[in-house]
Length: 109
Image 1: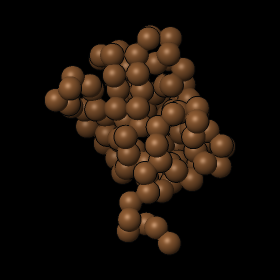
Image 2: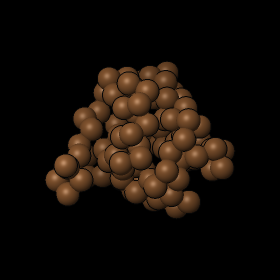
Image 3: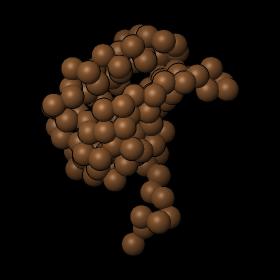
Image 4: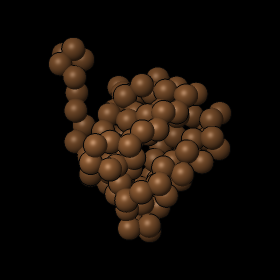
């Protein structure tokens, strides 16, 4: 697992996760998500480098979304890997997260 945090030009915190959003990394991921939400009013979550996501990973994303609402902050998923898109679509939760699911041209059928 690798986590990269940076501040964007508009002041948002961007957290990029490289690895798998799975139960095996749940505690570590949860801490990074909570820290990112507390860092400022906007957390941009780049999941474009996530190779695998299971239900524990999905639960962490749902937790982060709920926490952002409690903290009166914003959580935006700005990059979706195919694995992330598949799980979010499977659970029919695209509207819950409220972010557009962008499919890169090289992944279209």
